[in-house]
Image (cartoon, rainbow, N blue to C red; front, side):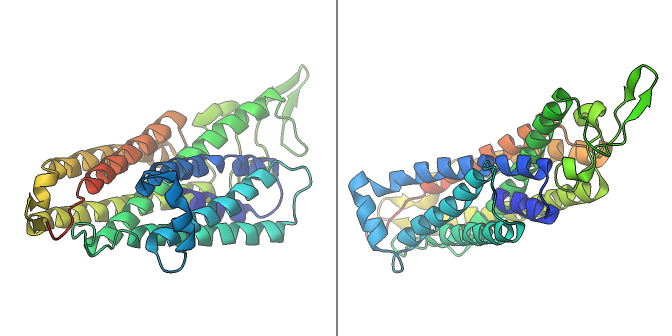
Length: 317
C-alpha cells in the first residue's frame, strides 16, 4: 500500500521535475519491504523444489495466485524504479499508465494474500475475520511507510539541493550588494511533488497546503484502519477457544495472543502519534519521528503475523 500512496503522489505531479524523479528513486523503500515479505513467505514452500508446483498451480491454487501476483507487482514496479534512473525516460502518459498498472497489481497482491489462508482444514486461519485483518494492517502500515519515505526523500533532496547551491531559474532568490542574502523558495518544478521547498529552513520548513493535505489524508486512513484492525483482532481472539482438535483449543497454541494484541495496539498507536505530531502541530515532516512511527507500526504488524502463524491447527487430530 505504501507503493500505491507514493505512486499517487508521483502521478499527481504529472510533469517532469527533479523532485518527482527523486521521489521515484525512493520507490525502492516499499519494494524492499515487499521483497523481505516475499522471502519470508518462501518458507511456506518447505523446500525450493516445491516452487515448480507453485507456478504450475496458477489459477486454481490460492498460494500460486499470491506468488504470481507478487511477481507481477515486483516486475512492473521494479522496472519502473529502474527506468526512473534512465536519462531517456518514456513519455509522461506512458509512465502514468505504467504506474497505474503497478498499483493495480499491488492491490491484487493484497487481495490474494488476504484469501490465501482460507484453508478449510485449518479452522483458525479459515475465519472470515482473517481477510479483514490483513487489509486493515495493509492500510494502517502502508500509509505510515509512505509518509516516512516522503520524509526521507525530502530530507535527502533538500540536502542535495543545498549542496549544489539551490540556485535554479526563477527561484526567487533575494540578493544584496555582497551577493546572496537569503534563499527563498524553489519553484514547484524543482520541489517534491506538490511541495515548494524552503531551502534554508531545513526539514523544519512548513509544507505546502496540497502536500500537507495529502499526508494528513494518509494519516487519517492509517488511523482508521488501525482502529478497525484492533476490533478485528479482538473479535478473532474471542473465536480461538471454539477452534479445537484432539490436542486442545487454538487459544492454547498462542496463550499470549491477547497480550500480543495489546502490544500491537501500543506500538501502532505510538507510531501514529509520533508521526502525526509534526504534521498537525508544526505542519512539517520530521525524518526521525516518521521513521520511528513506521518502524513501530511494522513491528506491531510483524508481532501479529507471528501470532497468526502459530495458530496453525489442523482438523482430524
